[in-house]
Length: 125
View 1 (cartoon, rainbow, N blue to C red):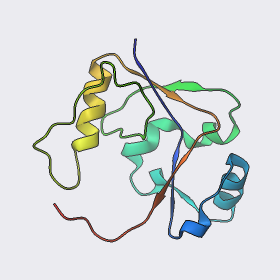
View 2 (view 1 turned 45 degrees about the vertical axis):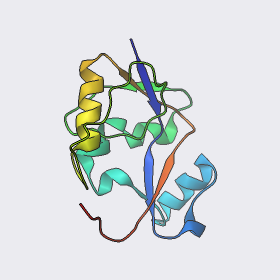
View 3 (view 1 turned 180 degrees about the horizontal axis):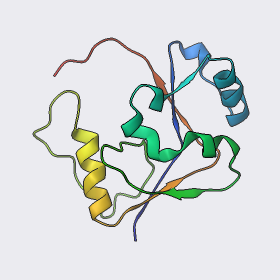
View 4 (view 1 turned 30 degrees about the vertical axis):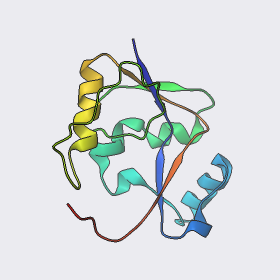
């Protein structure tokens, strides 16, 4: 089967707030300086199981759930294409990961990797 590997996504407001290590990230979360992305959209990142990731020392698999839209690292081989008619915000990543799930991809969370999302202004469709 195919695998998609990823680490949890975090949200910050300023580039100077981006933690460089998992330990620094966990400290920033404990001080409420950084917020896990699932706080903003739980269905999109809930399956990642942030609580488990905080303490894990090895990769672990998660089950796909409707609306799951993780950030991933994967090979191009066999990866579905994004549906070209989507414009703007919403459903493009969700439909991509739903298709990947039905194609048999596994979702593996990597223990020491994470993505930081910078908050930004509105989106244009």
